[in-house]
Length: 427
Ligand SMILES: [Zn+2]
Image (cartoon, rainbow, N blue to C red; front, side):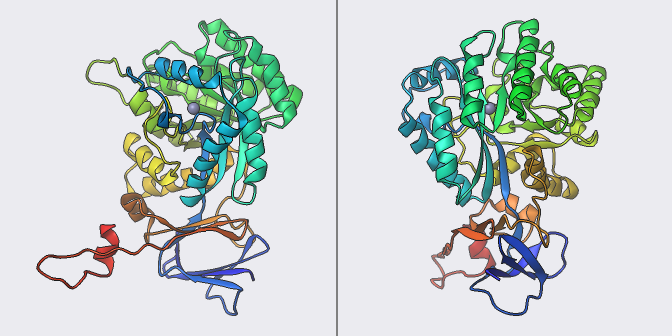
């Protein structure tokens, strides 16, 4: 045995358990006898499968540290600001920023990340090459899937098509798509067709950003994506991010689309915090939330998960690559607040997100890969409420992050420092 985590609270177990790890896998759960080279007592904290971030633009991350302000707060201005940087991207610059975000992710319990890199005639393949290098250099800490993403469109920006092919030959894991950015519906369909043609030629999964305009109930990417997924036999290999317009369709049409999405085995990735900020900015009250129909998709049996999308970039002024924070946003924005719904949110951040990325068995179990996180709380609800530091992060059986924080409340009338639960919660 390489490692024993003692006195962990596990979901679905009444009492504290030990979790033993060897050869990169969980080998025993229970009152573990014997010793390991490395033992850590987590004193009743919750241990679960680690977090997964299925959608983050690593090439743009942290640009907000040096960009001019996005004065309108709109997507259009964000794209404009991004262009100013993208023209001058260097591999070293993209790597330095993306590496910081990967380190933030690992330190908050994420061990599997799907990172997007723009591929177009403006920045060429620079962002993608940077992420591919980072994938190798950070392989001891995190699994990084690199998406070749046509951020400028394929019809609007025909250079991107050949570049996408080159990106896949260089080793991009996933083929991105951005049909809703094209001007016309026919062009959006042509974009989706072109992506499937490339995906088939290079045998890659697809991750498209679709219908990201809740203001426009006429945008119809998702249903066409679902039809093409079924026609191409790509079921289980396609993710659709955003799908915000689904909320603007009438209920009848929305139900038809949701049924198609389920048949196509498409995973839907919502990014509620981004949508809450970027979408419906010009609307009059009552202003919609701008996110997709999370609950209806879940009820229909669609795999719905959520992503960080942006970290401190022209599109979003916040974010710290912490999926616990994104989970809390999702719970709020999608009305997931009943006890079983909150447990579902945790599954979405862990096992279900991994499933969306084509990774099976991302859960705690004997014989399964030891990709684990210990949060500073005894339950899922408390973890979401407290948003505390991660005590331990384990990737492929190895401890990749550990933290110990000490804090205390100091009362004026009583100089004795408060200790125990109250002090822990005060952090
Ligand atoms: Zn995105």
